[in-house]
Length: 397
Image 1 (cartoon, one colour):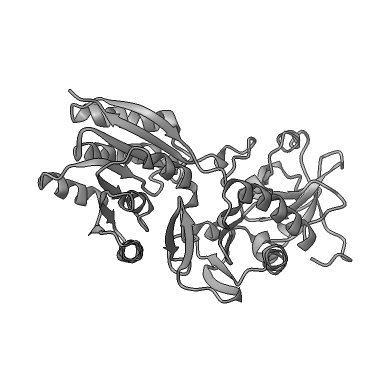
Image 2 (cartoon, helix red, strand yellow):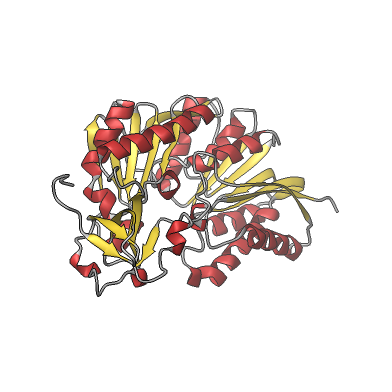
């Protein structure tokens, strides 16, 4: 963004600024006065001056003219437009929280809207930072974003993992690119006192699911002797139990994910029994073999990605929990998770309850977990609160 070039204005329709004044950051395409300021005339990724219908400055916003969410506020201060200086400030504010809560340099450093940088995610693995841009504006400003990260953290390497499906809606190409220095295939990290390696170059999303870190700490105190980790990815749930003496088995449809489990298990000096295939099919096979576990963790990808998927997804949550319950010992622990924003915690609880009754069991919900504190919730944007984890005890007959 050239500081000497005046930014275009984007004016809202009457009374469409109320939600923004209440704290929200998104502007929908039908809220813009396109007669006064044509939206399609703005280049994707451009920064504009967002104005109320009366012409009052509301903030600087990045524009995605062909998306339902047409603009996202990046700054509400007229003397602080988006650029490296603002990004350094945002990073320092975010860094202060993470270092206070999770000292050691391994955490979700930036969580998009919640850290006032819509469309941008950053995960830190010590001296390696993995970035992900989901909007045209984050893509357009990625050079300044990288410069800001280098100024604040001076990392050995910075990687763009811009291969997520969210980019499709913005018309952005998918790619993985080293932006600075040296980035290994797998980056070391420490969680809960355990040393792991995250497949940052080829794994899912940015390599590691930090959002479950606090729930995994909750899990440790139950000290199960036999654990089944379903939809395991890199196996953090099961491995955290295995290093404390448990026998752990892992289920995933991805061969590369199970290879990461086995690699982490070898580094930790623990055994890992792995099963590749559909979780539904594997759990049915384990039930047929008469296998039993003291704890089953079900941490699937979002079964409900869009509202229209709700009924089908809710059925899937009930089915997978039902299968998990059939593998639990008397008084066993079911950890049932959902990362779908479109599924409320009450709905997940109902799905677990119905699953239990279908197999003639009763459960108690002992704890309800959410996303870790390095994934803060923006109170005006419910989409930023997405993760649920139910810790359920199977009651004896």
